[in-house]
Image (cartoon, rainbow, N blue to C red):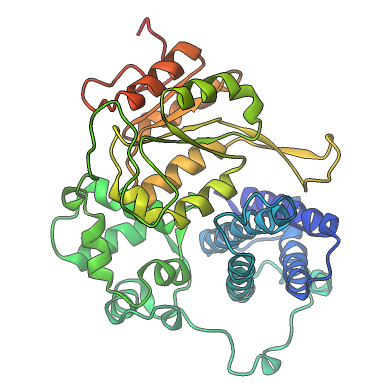
Length: 419
């Protein structure tokens, strides 16, 4: 993605976040800090959207990568701000403590501050502002002498020793953002054993949650934490992934776990659940537990809260997902109907997220007018899309019957019974 396109995307994202926080009308100091930093990012990037600034062309790619990296952090903030706002409806508190949301936002703010410093360095290196001194007035960033010891370096983000050594030797100690293809190639070289293309692809799904095209040491450090990079890679090797516990038979089963979940389980994500009331009722009468979530943000948090359960029983006879494809999402729950934007990648983003979490459960996109936008399902295992009620009902019936073999009618793009 070129810098102009990346800048337009990120500025639009900044405006949505600022609008959302403004409409919340709360005095939470953390939200004010986030809003202030988002304004800085927007004002810094906005001149690039005009396409008129003089560029030297030598390091344009690095600038684009830096803008995309900022965008990935902003997308995370956008999701967490929505979850923060939804506390008022009590939808989230059943499985997520209020303090957990605040902590996520604090982590987001730290990452955004760090990415802001990297972005400033990229712009200075490229020399975009060489002939545009007045643009500097748009940005209010503390001078370096006021930053104390300065922001953490790339290596400071990595607690695992082998992760630090990998980044230092194969990426570069001072490199803060790297293209996913470069990262993947160098990770394979570092690992030193056969690392299949599919394994590398799934690893990138985990590290690049929003498919932004970049990997940062923050993302790698957050995933590996205090463990081992080698152990992380081995977990994600496709040949090492073990199937979940299989429980066959047309009956419901409450696992002996500290969980309110039971099998078979259907997780349904749609911002308009009333549209699916007949299908949901059908599933429930078949003995299936149905979890309904209203947004990708809620679904991601729910998955992370129940990740151990989902991985343990990850099998087509136990757990399945259904999602709509696109969502009209408001700037806040109190926004007028006119103040909405189209999230055209909602279904794909959730599928990408699940596969990055090593959840291979069947995933069906159930939509209508945007069915032609769902060709992405062909890039994933155990995924399909359809507009037909009969296909959806068959998909549900096969879960109720605990089928795992010969269950192919729903797989593929825009499926109907004639295929």
